[in-house]
Image (cartoon, rainbow, N blue to C red):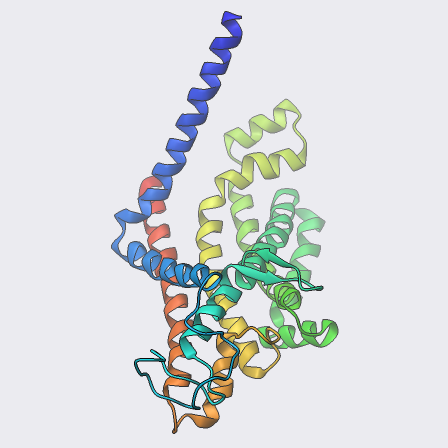
Length: 308
């Protein structure tokens, strides 16, 4: 009984210390002014996205006001060419990008399209990159040839190919972002694996007879997570740009929920009557992407300083 209680106590202490360590690692971003500013911008948009799930000033898709109103006491950011409230549409657009994805059948799952797209590119890219870097030889050559072939195509062409093959939808945009982002992630993961696989703890795992899967994902990947995390923050910004670009071209996220790129596309014909309808979604895209880049720069700066 005493041994069991002692084991439980040690496990609880270990769990507490692990959470404390994770908390301390998360707070190092606050040591960077650039990173803190970026985090504040990103949290601002996350807050608006979460708020839009329970409240918006007006229904985002309802045409209930005069068309092309400038900012006023009733519509703080004005209205668009159909008389829809721009603030409500901006808030809902943030929700679609950051915290909610619609699957076929109308099922909504947590996590925005940009986040799921980057997650998919991380999973696929890390698996391919670690495999290529760890095994080397013909395995490395075949995987890198496939990746080089994908990189040779302009991203917008790959987006168009995927959407033309699969149609429109949140999940199609996620697949497009995954396919175009995976090669870059794989090249980074491969370079990290080539460096880490010759270190002592990896050689010790090989001596113990551990499997290649165990070594790649339990020994190499945890020690490569810093650069991969920073790269993921940057890729979320790229994904938001991609979603906005596809929306501007009219082949992005399907209606009725607004997306910022499509808002710019719809409003550009009325820019002389109401420049704010173009300005607000453009600023939303720019500020969120800048915030993510500042956060990634701060995270990279602080993690590099702590590793030295």
